Amino acid sequence: MSLSAYVPILFLFALAAAFALFSVGVSQIVGPKRANRAKLEAYECGIEPSPEPVGGGRFPVRFFLVAMLFIVFDIEIIFLYPWAVSFNALGLFGFVEMLLFIGTVLIAYAYVWRRGGLDWD
Image: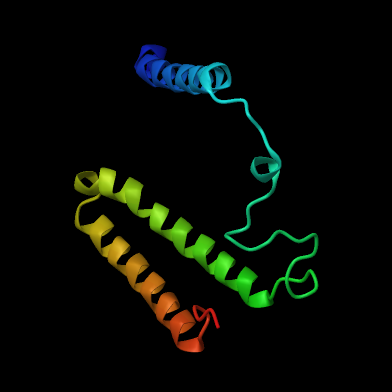
């Protein structure tokens, strides 16, 4: 495969980088520069900011469990994109393999749901 096949991809990355740099530069030039105490203060969803987190500074373990479950299921779903792109090339074998994969993910999801891993109480 020749390198000329990658020219459009490199052009797209260069265009995206140029747009990002242009947007940041223009916002610095054109944006308002009137800062006050309220604008410089941290915003915590309508709650008065405090130096200590609620509950003595410790997060509950359930928070981390839900975050890890989200990451695991999100990464498993990402595997569907390459499969969808090469669906015709994989044929029936690829279809059956993806059905097994989705079945495994659904079994894991049902197990986590049944055990209460998705409850936020």
